[in-house]
Length: 168
Image (cartoon, rainbow, N blue to C red):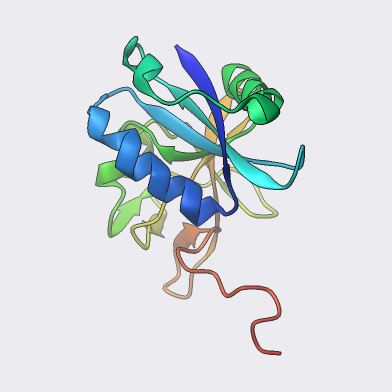
């Protein structure tokens, strides 16, 4: 079952917090929960939640004015076309430094690509920074990584990004 939700979260952090408080406690081992940036009817973050259970129906209903955004999020997740995965099988093991091969073997992530390059080699070390957010791309759950100062890789998305224009 894949459920789309749009509850008007204004930021990704707010949406992730809501997922942690309301979806993660359901204890679903096959859970894949994603964020989706949407623009209509106003800019906000919609969610898609997938698991092989009817327990997802326990989650709140999307308000009428946001249903189109929720339906779009569910459709994108169903097609495995877009969505940034926050919860997925193995996410709890994505801590510290792992090789790309260990990451692939220990999680639902299907591929690691280096920004502006090709698929990462399995023996490359990857400093997870304890923050690994893959995304659906062409039917696969893909982590985008970048070169790290230690000589290996790190996820492209950082845990606490500096807001645009923070210095002025």
